[in-house]
Image 1 (spheres, rainbow, N blue to C red):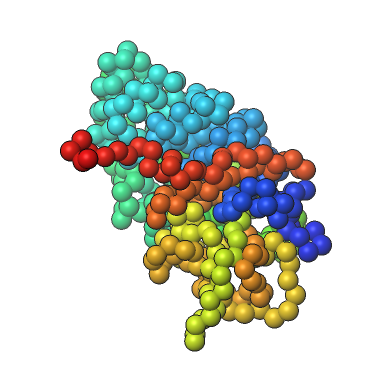
Image 2 (tube, rainbow, N blue to C red; image 1 turned 60 degrees about the vertical axis):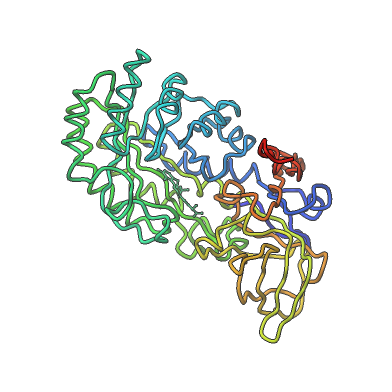
Length: 432
Ligand code: LLP
């Protein structure tokens, strides 16, 4: 369920017309729905009620302070991957003691910072990292809580750039090695073996790979837990969302399964996994990113030009790959709809940005209603891995972001001014 829908001819986010937001704040503009964030968090939380569990939002998917604050208010912990993300959590009022720290390249400074903030656990990716954490903890006279990330070597059947749970990937420690690694880790000073973690990939729309991974890893978790006295098992993130027919999926009927085409609902996820996880008697952590934030956001853009060549109808918009890189990077599909609904026939159109690269497109040969200069479009399901992957490429300022709650809306990131783009730069001393 999400909160973007047409009311008459106008596209709304909750009770706010997106055209009013575009007029007020300009474009490109990210718009987030607080109701969707809350609804998705609550649905997942309720589906897992039979387990002692904690949802740790993967804030790499959307780290806007207002988004984090919304989820922190619901009791969420956070999956962070840098000192920056941990500092953001704290700045947004999140609780570091509910955070897990993932990533293959944690620096000594990051480890020290996280230890001082009282992180719940480091999700460790290598033995070298275990040794580094031990060394830093010893120096700081702290006990470092750690979980080793097990790579279960299960193919998640998702895009190659976002699959993580096979031996082709840089992540985790091979399933067959993990017990030996724990035995060695138990001898390191200032380390507490608090749990175990895995994450097999992102945008999984079928529960089968999750089930396969949990089935494979659960006996290992049980053995290790008996030996080392674990508190938790994190099963990672990865629950996929609807990109095709995103607008239609706002209809609650999709979530009851009566209309949904292969949508992975929290209920279906829980029905398969809870019976496998419950007997472990551990706290179960989840690290969903996209599931909570993806359909909660849209990118609103203005049509600047229509350009017809012999072969193509190009709709040139003011958003670009620097604002939303997913189509260029992963060939991702984002549904594109006009803010004011149009009748009439559709035209196969390429929706492209102003950046000087052929890869700067949002859609190719997409049937779109006839739009013209000054019309606005919304790219749906852009709340995850959208704004966070933004850049200043072509010296374009970062887009503004708005959070909507019912009839209220607030600018939660102002548009970056041009001079801010080069604010960190200077002339070399020898330049006149
Ligand atoms: N936990 C770990 C250890 C992860 O590496 C990730 C995502 C997550 C949790 C959250 O996964 P989610 O629930 O959002 O699927 N930029 C790509 C996605 C990269 C995912 C990286 N890791 C995209 O736009 O599709």
